[in-house]
Image (tube, rainbow, N blue to C red; front, top):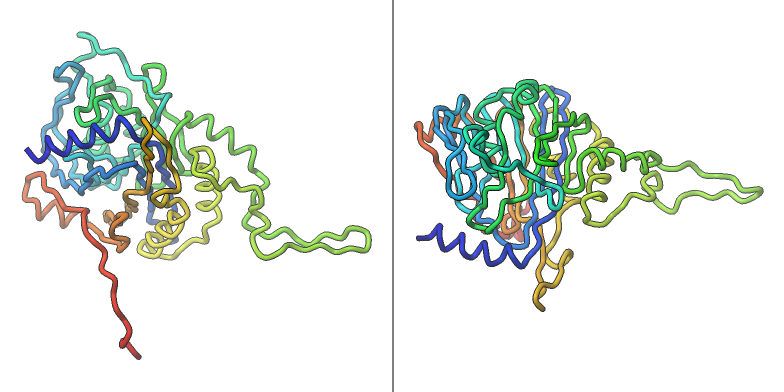
Length: 360
C-alpha cells in the first residue's frame, strides 16, 4: 500500500516537474584508489534508499505491456541508491569494484522496438544497472557484453513513461565508458576524463570541450601595454570564461575543469572528501532552477550526492536534508544481509550541533 501511494505521488509530480540535472566525475588517489562521485537532481523526493543485493539474486527483465524479458542470476554482490521503492540500483558498486551510474538523457534516448525476436534479451532501461553490476567485474567485460541485452521502452509505473537515461561505468583500474541508447541501439564510448552530465550525446560534449581549451587553473600573468602594466584582480583569471550555469553542457565543462585541476590526495578517504568538495560546486539549491507548468512553479534541486571508493568497496552519500556524510561498507553490508535483499535508509534530518561551550 505504501509503495503504491509513493508511486502515485511520484507520477503526479513527474508529469509536471523537470528532472534533468545530474553531474558525475572521477578522481584517483595517489594510493591507486579510483573514486567516482555524482549528484542527483530532481524536482521532488525520489524516496531513495541504499539497496543491498547479494550474489545469487534472480532478476527478470520487464518489457512493455507487462511482459517478461531476460532472466539472470547475479554473479556479484552489489549495493547502491535506488528510487521509488524499486530494487533497481540507479547508482552503485559491486564487490569487484565496478561502478554504474544512471543519468537522465532527455530528447536523445531511443530504445529498441520490442519484438518476439528480442524478448528473451530485453529489459527496461532502469534495470540495466543491476544487470551490469550483477554480471561484470570490470570495464573490459562491460565493453565485450554491453549490447548483449536490448533496452526496450518499458513504462516505469511510477512515472508513466520509459525514463530516458544513459549510463557511466567506472572500474577500480580507472577505466571508464559511457553507454547511450540512441537510434534504438546501444552505443559505447571510452570516457578518459571520467565525467558525465546529461543531454546531448556524449560525443557532442567531448567535441564541445574544444571550445574551452584556454581554461587553466594557473593565473594569467601580468601584461605590459606600452607603459601600463595590468595584473589580474584577485585569483582565478585562468578560468575566465568558465560557464557557470546549470545546463548540462556547462556542468560538463566545469566538471572536467575542476576534476582535472584537482591536486591528487594521498589516500582513498582523503579523495572521497575531495570529490564531495568538488561536487559542492554543482549543488542546486531549491529555487535556483525552476520553471512553470500549468501556472505552477516547480523547482529542481540536488536530492542526494554519492561518492564511491572502488578500491576499498565503500559507498558514501549525503542528502539535501542531511549534509553529514554516511558510509556503507559493501562486504559488511552483504554479510549483514545474510543472503537477502535489504534496505538501508537514506532519509534523516541533520542535527545542528551546539559547540558554544566546547572550549579547548
